[in-house]
Image (cartoon, rainbow, N blue to C red; front, side, top):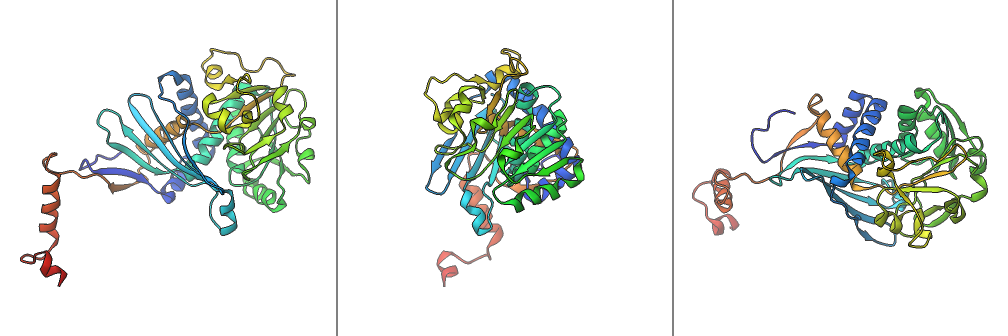
Length: 362
């Protein structure tokens, strides 16, 4: 990254520059490398400060803050989730994030995280599948073909070799759009008329719908032996996708139980419902899939360490791809204790001499 001439200059990655960065690296390479950062941070899970995200819920959505620190760096993300937004031409999810130096508290990076959240969510799903799905899994059903679907498909292709997709959405045009968007990436794609048909022959089932409701997107009779379920859409209180019986016959893996029990599929279950933590599997402390006939379920709600990984990755890639703007974000007085003096000097630089406050008003 280029040297910063003043302490108040912070690199800012805009939406435009984030898109340019993804294209400069290549979307599949970006996802594969991001998977490495996500996996690395799961392996050092015990080093992180962890707390459930701070959420402000409303009738139509949620606004959340997601903070964490590894003792050296501090990161947080601001993110919303408003499914109704698509009716007015807005995104369901928007976000931005900050990475800071714990030693002095100064921000090191400010970036858009609407694209980056989609990328990190897909990367986390793929990392989980790497450790939980059957070896040689190539066919994935994606139920819910909204803004996340293409990212999920490409992450699974980049990391574990999925190259056959079966798509279903209640809005067929969403599936057709997803098919068009992915046409150049080497997938064999089938748009299915029902969710039941979509899961036929699938090694992996990804559910990723947006509506904030307790829905049954996947019923128990649709899930056969040996399937890995990537349950992404159930990510807030009162929002689930899976029939309860599926959970009872699956090995369920979660990111951070105190958060997932509030927001994930397991909010349907008693407080003592047994789950296993994904980080322990990735770090080699616990086994993942017990056998080819078992059903594994990643109850994904998204956690702050994954955003931290994404922020770390982007900052590292900016060293060779300076796709950012210098943002004048922090006050930097000549004398750190003389903040008001900085304000006075700014007035002297910017205002005509000899005019006091009352004169300027008149």
